[in-house]
Each structure stands twice: as C-alpha cells, then as structure tokens.
Length: 264
Image (cartoon, rainbow, N blue to C red; front, side, top):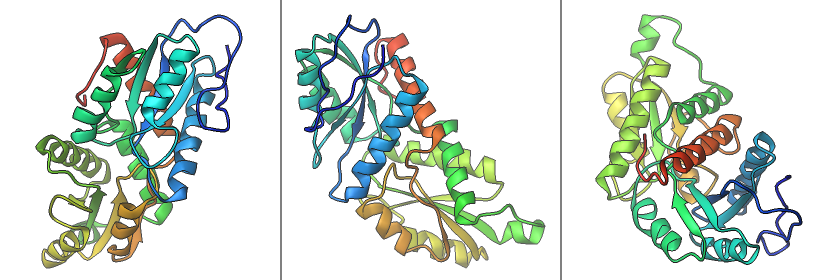
C-alpha cells in the first residue's frame, strides 16, 4: 500500500484499503520559526517514503510548527491506526527525547513507541562528512597540513549530561573518519561556543578549521554557529540520503525492540 498524503492542515489524509500491518512511522521534529526548517523536514520525510513506499510516514512537531505531535497521533487514531513508532529528528539524548516526546506518546490514543534519537551513529557521521566535503573540506595533503587542521562540531547544546556525551561520541566518530581532531561546540546551554572552540584550536596551532553543522535543519542556532565559523562551514544535515536511511534504521530498531530510548 502506498503511503498516503498529508491533507492541507498537515495531518494524515484519509486512505482506503486495509490497515497497514506495520506501525506507522512518525518523524518528530522540534519545530522552528525559520520556514526553511519545515521545508527541509518535509523533504526528509519524502526521502523516507521513497525508500519504503509501503510504510505510512507522517510528521509531528514538538512546538512552533503544525502539525503538532499530539494532533498527528490523534489523526492516526481517527483513521484506525493502533500503533506508531516515533523517530525523533534530534541528534542526542536530552529533555525532549527523555521527557517531552515520551509524555506525548503516553498520552496518545495509539500505542506509540519512541525510537532512539538519530545520534550518535555512523550514518550521522556519513552525513556530516558529506556536508563538509560539499562545503570545500579536503583531506590534509601532508603531515604538516594535518597538524594544522581541525573541525568544530557545532551542536544545539543541552544541560543534560547524556546529550553532551552523545555529541562527544559523534565528534569522536567524525574525527576517526577525518583523521583530524574534532571539537564539540554549542549554540546554547553548554560550553564551549563555536567561537571559543575556534580560538582554542588556533592557540594550539590549528588554523585550518572547518565547522560541521550538527543540526537537522536550518534555523537560528545553525545560523549563529555558521556566523562564528572562520572559513569553511557545512550546511545542516537536511534531507541527505544517509539521514533517510538512519530514520528507517531507528524505526526498525524500535519496532524490533518494542521501544528504544537510548542511542546505540
């Protein structure tokens, strides 16, 4: 059965035929006042649908954009769906993953399981690497250039220590891929900032620095981090094909395990 379209309010439109045997996949986006964020998330949703056409795929937001997650889950129940897997489009554990989304899932009129956030994971690192290359990053040509090179991994930031641990893990995986140091930096709630991380790397003799954007979509935090970049700055992760594969991987994990809330 082909995944049904969204109606003009952003909720699942009606469909005919039998109910799907598998739980629906609901992408859970944070929401943003930047209109590019909604465009990006919808593009990612379409990539997921293209990869698995028989799977019903929907969108719900935590805040700021419609449809809100509770409305999406209510619409699914009205259509007769009884199960859904919620895949947070978030890149580590934090308040939204641990509190907001599980609370919305528990209050839903369908059986809603919460998948792990998208990071850390090798597919996330694949996307970060691809975005850096698109921005002009190239591998150091020799040992001298390698010693002068580094990357700052710009993330949203959180006071939750698990969120910081996940960002550090992503930074380590990216450093292994690049062969140069990768320093986590944050837009809010944690230190260092991107500007401070760049200064610290400069003080250690690393002047060939790029900024990797560990944000799902464009928005205020991504823009602020980009402005602090010295030269090369990657675009947000967006609707890269590896991100669509990662969304489906998290869906499959949660479906097989009966609900996963911690990053693998």
